[in-house]
Amino acid sequence: MENKPLAERMRPRSLDDYIGQQHLVGPGKVLRKMIDSGVLSSFILWGPPGVGKTTLAMIIAEQLKRPFHVLSAVNAGVKEVREVIQKAESGRFFNTPNPVLFIDEIHRFSKSQQDSLLAAVEKGIVTLIGATTENPSFEVISPLLSRAQVYVLKSLEKADLERLVDMAVERDYVLSRRGIVVKERDALVSYSGGDARKLLNILELVVNGLKEGEVIDNETVKREVHENPLLYDKDGEQHYDIISAMIKSTRGGDPDAALYWMARMLSGGEDPKFIARRLLILAAEDIGLANPNALLIANACFDMVHKLGMPEARIPLAECVIYLAASPKSNAAYLAIDEAMRHVKETGNLPVPLHLRNAPTALMKKLDYGIGYKYPHDFPGSFTGQEYRPPELKGVTFYRPRQNAQEDKMLERLRAWWKGRYDE
Image 1 (cartoon, rainbow, N blue to C red):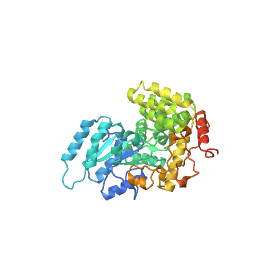
Image 2 (image 1 turned 90 degrees about the vertical axis):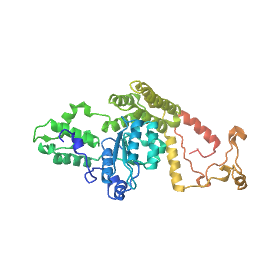
Image 3 (image 1 turned 45 degrees about the vertical axis):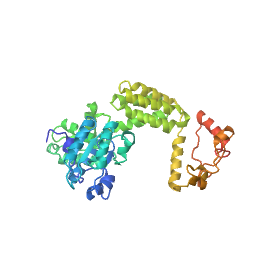
Image 4 (image 1 turned 30 degrees about the vertical axis):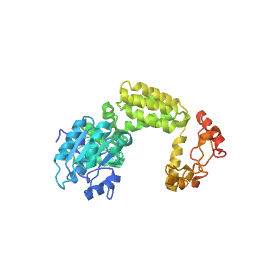
């Protein structure tokens, strides 16, 4: 028992000891109701490291008395996936519940590995619980994603982390015998970055450096952490704070700052694909139509990073972040689609005007589908000025060009076409 790390010794065995994620496991919440009903469906837990994804999966399987199979995407391939599925299938009996297949870091599975799961999940041979720190929309194939709900876990709050420290000191077999007094918790909480596992690792490190009965305060924690730089890893607070600093520097037009923050991440072992993905999002969201080439550059960078890996991937990443930082910025498209989606939510399914409807059959033509449609290429300048919006949206404008050379040209053209619409 004493040979196990503190984080493992403190791993909760029931929801009563589980800290955080009350929006999922609190009374009446979705995962709590799933456990209470005994009906378990496949799902993916998405959240930062150390917030209890693996623990939650283990608790659910234990409380529902389900066989629990674990695979790590880091070292498991298609062969291992099929072996587990075969084992689960051979152990099935009439009216017995499906075993749980837990896949840690499912975002690291290749398409072929994920494909190998589909049939087993669809047929109910296994109930899949995946855990990921990355957006499943990018990393999990659509057919698998459609068969599994995604639940978002949050970084633990300060009160949760402080409670965890107190529980460890009071309940852990090893720590409770040391007579350690925790006088201050702010540094412990700050360095953990909302990561329970990291918090307990730091606490254990600090305790190991103290004599029996000594006091833990903020200065003690800072001293121990600064003397152990390995505690600064890519999975905690820095993962989110530094990528935020890089994105804000790039958005703000400062290539030097953006390069510095990116270098910090790469030096700390950050996955270059994570950085490339964020740059791709930034190119669409923050540069957009002010420089359409930015999206092409970011996409090429994303592709190269996947092909090259480190250390070579640092070069296209550097080129991309410099180019994006130095580009003119516009979030007009980002705002426009959000505005359009807001209108869709408010107005519902407005009917498509007859002249815009497709008319592939005689009956549809008889019902006037497509009647009155003007083919733009039959008109001077390939423009007709006909109305394309539902009547209910007449006068509504979603796209509002920003002031930059590229969109100034687009605005001039739109004003010439649509008299009065873009004159505001």
